Image 1 (cartoon, rainbow, N blue to C red):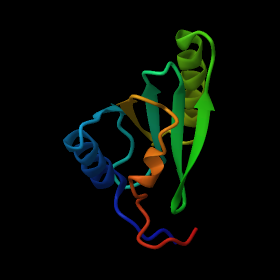
Image 2 (cartoon, rainbow, N blue to C red):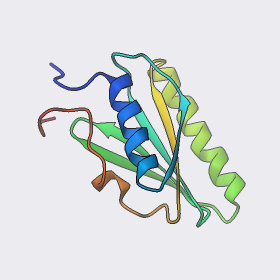
Image 3 (cartoon, helix red, strand yellow):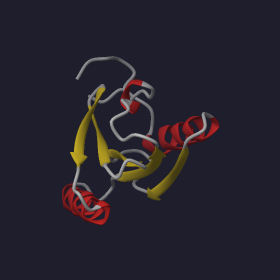
Image 4 (cartoon, one colour):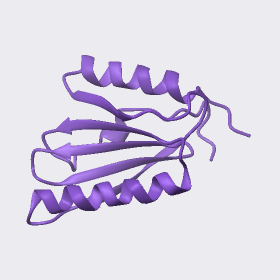
Length: 117
C-alpha cells in the first residue's frame, strides 16, 4: 500500500521549493490530484536533457543526448508520450538547469513517507 503525500500537493510544494532556490521550474502537465506518476524533465543549458521518474522512494534517471539539442528534446518528448499511454494521470514538471548531469534527485524527496519500495 502506498503511504505518501497526494501528488498534487507534493508537486506544488516541490515547484515552490525549486523556484525559491533559484531554479526555473514549471508544471507542464497536470495529472490526477491524488495519484499519478511524477516525471521531472531537466532541460540543461548544456544541450542535454534528463528525465527523472519517481520509482518508490527513489528517482530513476533517463538521459537524452544528441549533437542536436532539438533531436534530444524530440527523444525526451517521445519518451513522455509513451509514458502517458501507461499512466494517463501522470504529472510532468520541467526544470531549467545549467548542467543536466547535476544530481537534482538528491535535492528533492519523493512522495513516500518511508524509504521502502
